[in-house]
Image (tube, rainbow, N blue to C red; front, side):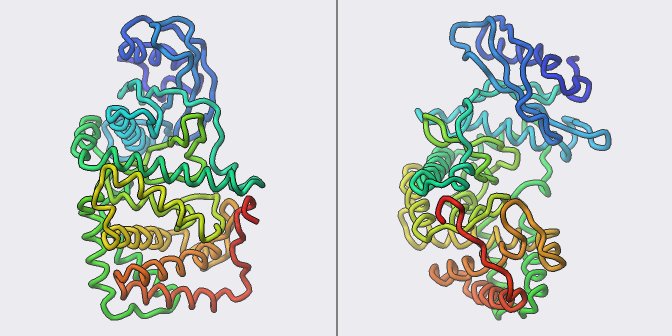
Length: 397
């Protein structure tokens, strides 16, 4: 048996024989690589770049290898549904699925193969590029807006490609090993407790009908109907790369099947799982959603229906604000105004609660939840009256 991820240590040269074997199988010939260089030797995963010294003619000049991380207390174990393996397998299945869908503008890196025992996947090297957070933190508003619209376009194209094909993703993922439903976007049993916790935190009695709306929300998320597709789950700006072929995504560790709009409302919700959170001009999220929708309809004709589309938008926005109501984001904001990246916890609530309330009101959907979130937004403003509002991203100031 080949060395395990833990036995290999961190040195990329120790990983080289595994990567050479994976590439040899994929491209049909012997491969020899240089010793490799670490790009991101993190705890959750380690990422390396290898240069090809010898190999088949169609082998690219460089490749990326990503290996699952682990700790002494939680080492990599491919047969456990929790820990480092589930993220690696989510990414493996997602990239393999997207690669098989083809297309002349792939939304992610091409997938070359993996080694389950070693905890390694080998991918196309998308190059240095420019991470999208550098655009919004820069000084060029036109470039920043173009980058954000490029992200929305790529998400729409990815969702259109995956619509109606999620059974194939599930087949690939199930073949790799058990998944931990608590560590992914699915399940949704947490929705009602999260809402109740938010309402209690801001001293708001749930509006009449909120329980029924929560049941409807859970049903919409559990069975998205025509909007069921493969989703990234964390398309933060630093998980997106501007390349000559357009914006491309990476880090699919929480990817899986779900409601397409969970990804698509990232602009509207100001990047809800990210450190890089700022305000946007109102026209920018609207243009992002228009670009996204234009791509989505190619594989999901139901997206042309305004009612269906904006109900899905609203459900996704509620999903994200309730995710904020779980755990340390809420408790941290209540206890002290903790900083995460370029925004504080309280600023995030003051920003997003009104957005969700307005989205539900405009959609005419889950109105009891919308009324409740509007009351929470008012209560948050009273609770933190001296808090400065979240400023625009620097590019738009």
